[in-house]
Length: 157
Image (cartoon, rainbow, N blue to C red; front, side):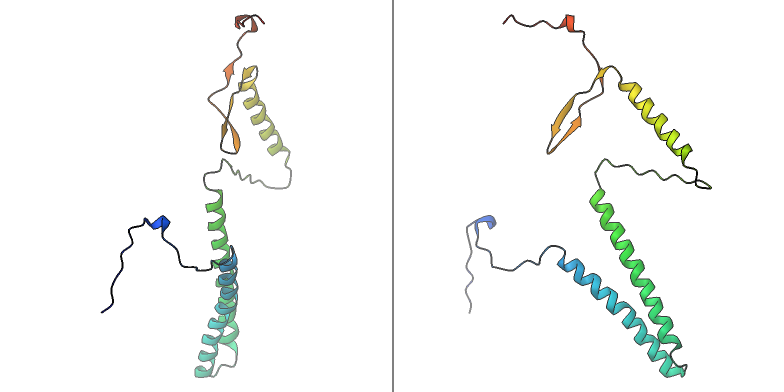
């Protein structure tokens, strides 16, 4: 009969067994490369099986391999989009998509210039206070009216 030992140390102080961790990105690269290889291969083998049963040459092999390749590319694209969205979550970035007929971009430039000028006018002549937020500086509160220098009282010296 095996005896169980009980540790009275908290988990953070207990010795941990050495299990090497994979390098960052290695598992993603491995799964992506296996997906690229095995997806079309499995679909191609299924097509070859159907070709053997139906006696149609290599029609289903090529067709299913192409379907597998399209499925793999689509899967990896959406996986990348999800990872990119998770990376950008919580960041103060805005994305604006402008669509138009033709290739005259002057209307977009005028819209963006006007928006920038309107935002600048709202802050013109006002004091903007920044505060430290971790490793970056962020605007603290709303822009404030500048205080006249005559209202500031300082000690002599």
